[in-house]
Length: 315
Length: 284
Image (tube, rainbow over all chains, first blue to last red; front, side):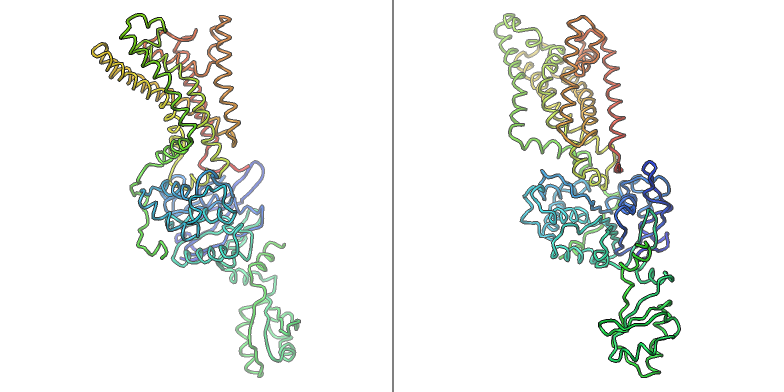
């Protein structure tokens, strides 16, 4: 089953009413979520509890209450299942005295691979992240982007089914960023579960439309961005209609069902606010055909991740 | 071609590992410092007393009792002589372990090691076991290994003298002693290492523990305050070791008291390690 917000019996990662306190501070509060296959973004502002929840899901922080399961198991009590899990930490700290090759080799040997298989995988992943030339250099001499790539490589090199990536694109140059985004999408398409934590909306948006939105330690929403958007009735959806006769179209739309506002913007697009996007989209073709109006393009302006994020968090 | 398209099969949790995780950790911990040439030299230097003792044993056989003037423990091929030899190695034990062991956990804490290690199929025992084995290996390299070589050498230059003891009992006693003492010392050093993120601070605390307590112990001995010798950290191991080697106690306190102190140290170290090294990250 794909994406976030699925039934718990089909989930690869599931959290049931998990919470975490640090002293008197509640970092995560009663979160329940389920993640299936594909790429899912765990999204939240800094301090929202995202990192704590992320590490709890990866079995690296024990919840104060509730249970987290990956493949239906509690990872820390059944550590063998970590062979099917990859984890890329957010922190930039790495053993600077190791070379890139030594680091990847150690990480794979800890996964239980023999020497020959380890070497094969190390060669492949160094090549895939274009680090072959730097393989013999110490990690201390790597740029931030290269360190990020070697962290990603260690999370993926053992061919895991569930991959946790914490702020994976930090410090990468545009080319590496594009390559990494493509790789994450490729992994998702292969039926792996990739949970990407980030506070950068476009970064997540470029990888997936499936999100889990967290704010002040609570899961605000989970699922596809458009679906979540439709569930926010108090904020009308804004649609831009591109037409050769914008003023006629605007005049016609005023007062129609589910249309709460109409204006023509600077690009001569008709910007419509609707309180029921689905009903509006259903009715629009009939209105156009019946009145001889033409619309060349429809653009939904605020079902972007940023808009959804703003609405839900009231920021 | 992506690695996934090469026909790799997923690893099942029941799958056999090429090497256990603790072995992988220990192997890395031992091999990495040995890349430094000066550390190799230090290890070689730690073998000089063994070479000297070997030479003395050889010449004793040639020159008879004359070589006894050098000193009993240097010429002795009795079990007690080898315990004294290991006691004499304490400077090398102190320095070598400070260099190789201080950063074992501190560096991991500083370098993301905890989340990288514990997002792999290994538990707390694998982690601590691997790190402890690293220290025990270096400990044995300057204690057990030279004693075993000396035993073999002594047997070869004095055949038939005390063959069974030299070839079997003394190495066995030394092995048991080194594993127990080395294991305990490694846990104490690891506990210090787990308390910080900087190796240098761990080294300072290690120096205070080893040299500081030895100095206090020596002062207490001079003042005739036997009870205070209980603070001598490494001294307790040698004193307790006299039980195993059938030797005279080295300190003014019972070897059983020393054994109790060693067990208490070890227990305390394990408690600290369990608190500090959690498979889960400690978030402040």
